[in-house]
Length: 465
Image (cartoon, rainbow, N blue to C red; front, side):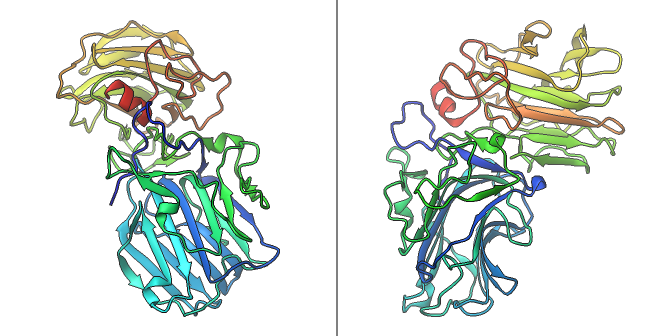
C-alpha cells in the first residue's frame, strides 16, 4: 500500500492541506447535519484523510442514521479493518463489507475512498473501498442489491461525522472530508502519486468537483466553525468540538505525536487528544516510557511539554529524554539512555547515563511549560522552563551517524501520578502567544531558538533529520 507520510520538503509546490480536525473520543466529539431533500441514493463517493489516535476500538467515520433499523456505517473495526455495514434501506438488509487491509499505524495519514454505484450489473463494482489510492482486498463482501437506494443522501436521515448515532466515537484526525452526491469517482479525483516518490500518495485540490445535491466539502479551515461546508451547502453542527481541536497536522505536513503502540506503559497509562496527551494514574509501580513517532538522526529540533499535573514523589513524575536507537525499557537504563530531566522530591536534576550532571534546579509546578532544544549534529541539549533556560546546556551527547535520537516522556511510578501534554508544533492545549519556527511551521508557547525546528515532515526534508 502506498504511504502517506506527508510532504517532506519545504520546496514542494503542490497542493497543501492547511488544517485537520482533532477528534478526542473521551470528549464524545462529532458533527452532523440532516438533508432536507434526497439526492442520489444509488451513486455517490465519500472521501476523507485520517490519522489515528487510539487503536483497537470500533470507531465510526460516517453514519447515515434514519432510525434504529435504518443505518449506513463507514467505520474502523476493533481489529483495525475498514468496515461498511447497512441495516435496512434499499441496499438489502444487513449487508456488510470489511477489508483485509488494516489501518493500525498511528504515525501516518491514510486516505479512504468509498465509492457506491448500485446501478452496476457486476455486484463487486457496486461498493468499493480504497486506501491510499489502491482498492482494498476484502475479508467479507456481501453483495449490495442492484439499484438499491441506501441512507446516504436520504432526506431526513441524520449524517454523522466522527461517531455512530449510538456512540463509537472516532479518535484521531480527519482532513479533507468530502461527499460527492451523484458520481462514483476514482481515488484520482482526490489524490495522486508523488512524481518524485511514486510510492507516496498525496492530496490534490478537490474544490472544483461537482458535489451534487447533498454533497459537502469539510476543509476544517475555520476554527470558529469547524463544520463549515466549503462547498457552500448547509454547515454541519459540531458537538463537543472546540477551536483548539483545529490542527495543522495534515496529510501534507505530518507532525510528530506520542506513539500509543510502542514503549513501556503502565496499566493506567492512557493517551488522548490525538496522542498528544498522556495520563498515568500512578496506580502501578512502573515508570512508563512514551516514545514519539519520529526518529531523528540529524538536525536541530525544538519541542515543548506542559506539565498539567504533577504528584510529588521520590522518582520521576515528568521526564524528558533523548536516547540512542534501540531505546531503553527503563529511562534509568544507564547503557542506553543519554539524557533525562527528573523531578524529584529532594532535588530537580538533569541526569546522563543514570548519573547526576546537574542538581538543585528550581522546583516546578503544574502548568509549567518545558522546552527542549536538541542539536543532534553537535550533541547538545538545552532545557527551558517557561521561556527561560533551565540548567546549563548539556554537551557531549553521541552524534554518531548510526545514532537515532527519539524524544520520550517518562512518568510516575506507584503513587506518583502525572499528566503531560506534548507539543511538537501542533498543540492540543491553548497557546497564549504563538511562535513558529524559522521555516514558519509549528505553534509554540515560547519562541524556538534560532535554527531549531518543529518536528514535522516538511522540516525533516529541510534539515536532514
